[in-house]
Image (cartoon, rainbow, N blue to C red; front, side, top):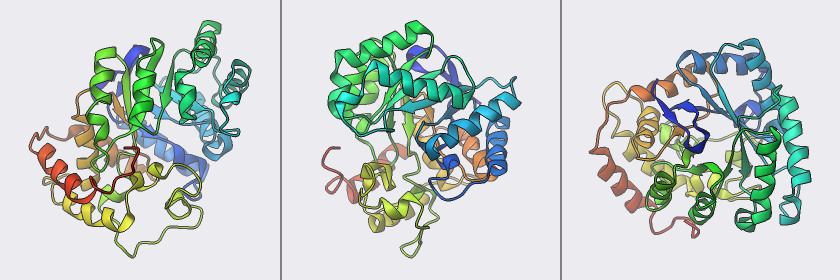
Amino acid sequence: MEQRTLGRTGREVSVVGLGTWQLGADWGDVQEADAFEVLDAATASGVTFLDTADVYGDGRSEQIIGRFRAARPDLPLTVATKMGRREEQDTANFTLAKFREWTDRSRRNLGVDTLDLVQLHCPPTPVLSSDAVYDALDTLVADGAIANYGVSVETCDEALAAIARPGTASVQIILNAFRLKPLDQVLPAARAAGVGIIARVPLASGLLSGRYTEQTEFSADDHRSYNRHGEAFDVGETFSGVDYAEGVLAAREFAALAPEGFTPAQTAIAWIIAQPGVSTVIPGARSADQARANAAAALFPHLPELDPAVRAIYDTHFRAAIHPRW
């Protein structure tokens, strides 16, 4: 699989990574044996980048990855985790003492002395403009607790604020065929600054797979049920914040763009890979087959004609109604 440099980390990572929110069982139950099958399938397909967080299953996702990594020490993996959502979202909580507490816990969970990459996990907006926050992160690097730091954000303005900081290695942001605004300023700014872009929610919580209909129901413990309107966390994390029924209609149009031999999901992932400035895309996978299929998107032929077609679908269905912050 193609490898790209992940911004200021200097690390080479696969263009298709693996998001592991689902391994924490926050999308429905996942047994550890099944999680290992997913990780085995992904890495056997060339995936070298795993993204997790300390709150995914209250650390369960990190622990599973830690045990997997220990069992397969020869695999060339970069593991990114996230911190900052374990406590109330108060700017006063984003201190060096708290950062040490959170990263020490993640280091234990992952079984490492130094974390490859730690990202602030969609913190309150003022945090991303705080000199003290970046000083604290620099201290963690100097202490050897973390090798690099980045941010995971909800808005383009937050991304731009982080990119302007010299120590920011990467920015994780929602980017998919239903969320195009990062293409306008964020990706060009990241390219100019040498900051990596990690594209999350690439399938709009599964909408872009083309498998869902207006009648599809999700289990009660799946965020696509309980966070449909942002009841639990930012609505952008669920179906990219778009109206579900409208998203189903748009997904049918997008599915028609898939060339022979590729699924709509692979087409959606490949379209993101083709955007200049993207370092890696992190679709999740609930099964080994899904992990292999996602990785195969890296083999997708470059089709420049997809860009105007994607833009037309976006303009028709979402531009007028998209979440105001975007």
